[in-house]
Image 1 (tube, rainbow, N blue to C red):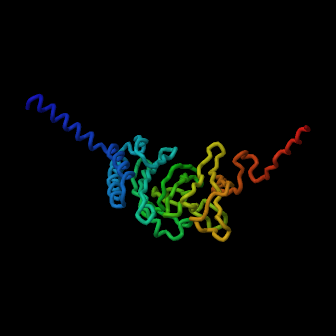
Image 2 (image 1 turned 30 degrees about the vertical axis):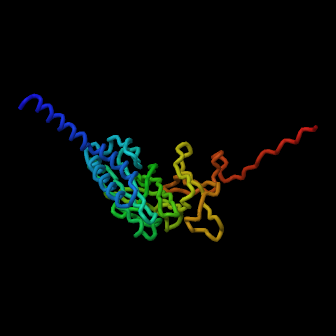
Length: 283
């Protein structure tokens, strides 16, 4: 074989390897999904994205490989034991389909789980304990680890486009039992019937704040109210009312606090008394 032919074959092999790099493919397919103009094209791009991501994550360095350049939602547990990648695309009826992967380490074993969105079949999502194959789909953007009974629970904050008129925010909980992942845990509310996750529905035309305030150590959120009193409970007609609530981790559960004061956390629950106005200057 001549040197020139060998060089051509070497370059061709290198080009093929570069083209088949799964991380680069994932970036390409994520952009393709975002640009797709109909449901069929979105579904096709999502399947290709899923395949490329599975290859990226299902390797020894899956928990630590850099994924910042892939344009999708991702949260990594601070302890390095799990990472979640989630994405979605709108359907023709205005609802959304959610896809995702959970990569989790138990001892020396790392397992990749595909998340299967079953939102439509979950009748009481706030009370349900779920698994990867029956998942209440959402795009997770923040993770807050807490400890209870010697176990770590990963509190996840997520966004959920629900319908053509309604958007949702979700406070989810990820835990592990026998090394297997479970979504939802009775960490909210009081009494015997505690909620496994919190779901907030509001008008698609509005936005809702939901984030973890590291400085104050609490989850802070907008309080939602109906546009009229008789519309209470109708998610598409709910929205922020300029007051704020919070969840604080206390004695093994997320304790709810109503009407917090974001201006001065030390004044939470106390009325704000404005200083008296100065008397007008005599003319």
